[in-house]
Image (cartoon, rainbow, N blue to C red):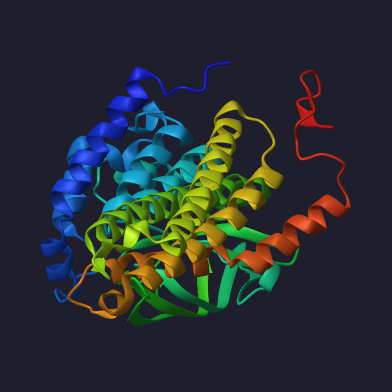
Length: 375
């Protein structure tokens, strides 16, 4: 079994790494902090120019037909650089429309692939109950309620949002310019533009509602995308911290020689490598069409745990300079906390994985090739 990346995958990773590192220097990130922009528009233009915005879209829809492994490599590079662009939401939402939306969504998918439209995605956690509900009306549906902290909710014209129907949660494609939608703009922990959306009898057609399978398909890939960002953020957080403690002197010694600091960095490294292994397995299973629910839950937990462990230990060994906003390390803590919130937190995800294990005998290791399902 070959665990190495292919030559093409390595090329994609190197290209993405160069692109993000060139456009996300500490100076540019500092400028973005005060620019009041919803995302880095110049960086997004480069993502479109290089085709990174449509990696996961089918070739017939104008994309590159690549898998989650390739997207994971790009998102890891984005996380390392803290690139504030809607890279994964934009294309995974469009990929779901291409796969499940049929002809009714073809125009939106084409517009996304050609970068004529920015598509927003908001995956509310079905376990929390429905804040946005749908009721039948005039051959279609009407949406009432709210969707909170929607990424780029005030800046996109179309969005894929979870609404709760009588038979359960579904993804719906919504025109965010429609009458009856009130937007309250805000900023998330790490500087991402968000908005609270309130719906008051917003009409949507039956063709705007995706089938039940679309939510499961998209949720698993969203977990992989968020975990890839966390992997990049935490990896760079460790790299910068190691560089700092190797230079910082105390008692005429580099603090990197202190056993407590070494142990802290070792714990952080172990957390990141555990996440890397789980994430790669998850992406492999998604690309191979294998069941991946428990692997996604495990990856979700490890991403939250790694973000907390690395963030805490990195800030601790930086001491007072870690809370100085003129020093860049705080941005990595903000990103890791924001990603952990979006993923739902370590404790909640560990409990959900425990619930799954309580009623299942395996984590998907046994596989029936004929039945194509986990035993």
